[in-house]
Length: 426
Image (cartoon, rainbow, N blue to C red):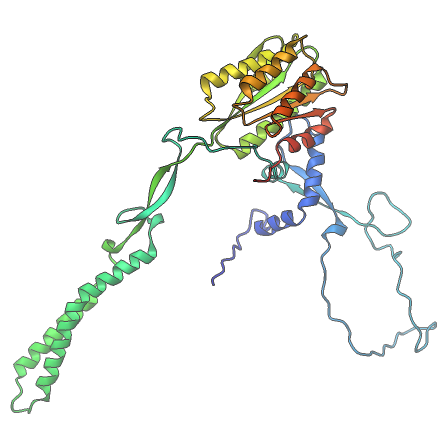
């Protein structure tokens, strides 16, 4: 078996392979630091890298040393306290040579933390580790644009990157055998004839015939040497064809309440939740589209810039947003072709009797077509009618409807991970 070792160095002469091993080994410590960093960050710096620390005691490694072995007699110059046979006590930890951890102390011992920086890509890998879109399904063949190249036998033409070495060498060997066989047969016959002529009595030998046979043998040997080891005719290539694939396209509807009851703090929390969702989908799913919907008394589909930074406000009618989502699905995203997801954030405050309308919209129209619906309620207070109506929806669709409460910014990341954690396949 052959082993290939990549010894290329990165920009700072550190092995990238060793860095990945280090990240894998201390994944638990790094994830804990990443979770703390996510909770402390503002919206503007959510996706930058991070500097994390690991206690030095957790990066220690076992060290093997050769022991002295046997019995030793040691003479210590200047010894006035001990005689032969005395047992010496091990020295204590107050040598003062250890590096201190935190503030200075009179104990002379401590432990430094090992600090290093995560790149943006590494940081986001840890942020979204173990997350996925629940219940993502393969839909029908949507169009011929989504294809996957698959092996389809061997071709005589192709690009050098797809050359099939084994088949090419096999074809070359077959060609050499076919081309050299008649030449070798003629060469063998000429050699036998020359030997027979040379075995004759000198009186009976025919010098002209011998010269002719030697010339023929030389010609045949040159023809054998002229047969190429491999020719362009021998080259074979792995043939690839584009095979249509079932579409796993998905669309995520981000629905945010921007009514007057949503304070600036509530809106900031909602924006941070949706920004996490946006980064997660952008990073992990190429075929996921995003639809942004803001609502107060009326709902409106907006672009990313307006969704995160507009200051529009008003009353609260949650059903307007669900109605708009339903209309967009009917017009642009048929359920048999798309995986449909909705993430809604609100403070739970809603217009009188509108919460019942929301429940009816979800149960009768939206939930039968959706893969997953998540609702986060941003409030430190008691739940209102909207939460109660949504609880009845969750009871009817327990696998595809999830709802959680967020009280403060520190709850965003744990709630997000709980909503989108990877489910075990059944």
